[in-house]
Image (cartoon, rainbow, N blue to C red; front, side):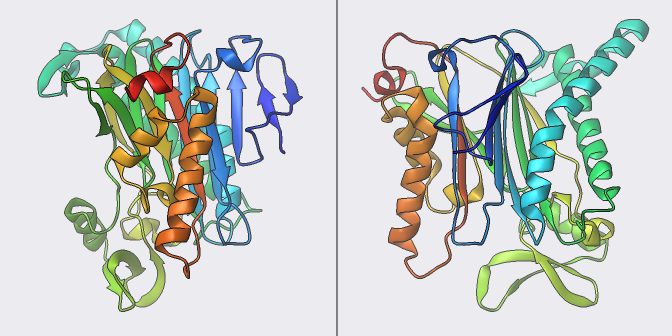
Length: 348
């Protein structure tokens, strides 16, 4: 049992589904858990500490706004970096967004920057471009703040980050590294479908490998793990980072590892049911569709994230009984507030 912090009341309270790795913030003054729009849960793997962190923040920016994020730390101090980013990044994002909004309201916004391709169609969304700039700027500031911490060695430690910001019917997705965001939606045939919202940013992707090699970083797999591409220093077989973007990892920042996120926009429809953000400990053993089906069958919103994590832990034990199990963390955000059992309604 850990603590959750309510920004609205400035009080620290206990919660059954909260531990030190996951936090729920609420600025909507929701009186009970039935007013929550989702759930989050984390389970420590076989390592000495759980390096994952997660957040679900209701009332973010606006009364109906929500921010959710997962952060997968790595390296000696990865558990510190992931929590540091989890605690600091939401305020950085909002501050950057508010500053940019004021600037654009003062000087105007060029219409040529308002067109964004969404599902093959060109749409105009000024708010998205402000959020996109805010995400890129906030991520850069976050990385600089980590570097300036004399008390924290992040030369070979860092964290991924996947963050989803919901403002009304608009979603902004910012991704750094190989954690993942997936949306559960209902097709015209009434079938639940998992739609990936992010791309796993790993060294094996051609665009990522090209950038790294242009900065004299090396991309190659170890003999005993031929399926995992890693990033190495130009003349030293270290550190072997298995992702191409991250906060921290300053030993590789001059060799192609960057803290600039990919940022996407999505306009929600009435068919979109829920989001799942999870660290790679979940995705390494469960497919997108498997996770979506697990959420739909979970029974309640409050149980959804724990059910996903429990399923991932079981899959690790079944598929890799002799391997070290990774930390598993998930956040589930529900987009339609149906009466009674929204999860079970999806699986019919």
